[in-house]
Amino acid sequence: AQSVTQLGSHVSVSEGALVLLRCNYSSSVPPYLFWYVQYPNQGLQLLLKYTTGATLVKGINGFEAEFKKSETSFHLTKPSAHMSDAAEYFCAVTAQRGNTGKLIFGQGTTLQVKP
Amino acid sequence: KAGVTQTPRYLIKTRGQQVTLSCSPISGHRSVSWYQQTPGQGLQFLFEYFSETQRNKGNFPGRFSGRQFSNSRSEMNVSTLELGDSALYLCASSYTQGSLYEQYFGPGTRLTVT
Image (cartoon, each protein chain N blue to C red):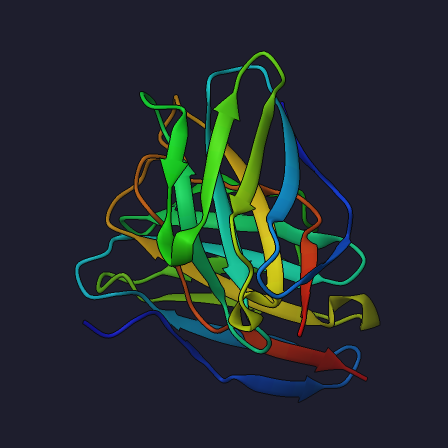
């Protein structure tokens, strides 16, 4: 069984400040991990994903995340927040094995960026 | 390349009615998944189709059903609508089945049940 916990349903940062969105996962099999972003009235857009190999993953728009197996975490960071980063962010997990793309999502974190 | 398209974008139905939502995947993509998004339950997996066959199903009642056509387009149907079915229904397509392949999401259909 798999699950995802996102710590903090709302995060507020000032423009130019560090963004840190937390994600912890539980998986009985090796996971693939994802971060998606959702802007109002839109679908989900993939920011980055971890499959295998390098544990520090770089994504679009300056975001990156680090897979830490020992901590079962996959936190999302960005060194300097921009107003356009305001959106809802979802962490997701799926199993490496099997022929399914079923994603298990966290509850989401709304990022507010203050000028 | 055109993205995933979903029709209609907005829909208002009455309790007890049924509804059909449509999803056209990215050209060349053969796998389609459906998700329900609500403020209370978040994003939940409904089902996944590949080559016109349902490959995986989430924990939803039998009122929720779907199908995939030979051109990979997919429809989902909800019968006997309940107020709790009000949600954003998202469709995602990927090149083929399997967790390694990126899923591309459509803009969703916003269903309101009154």
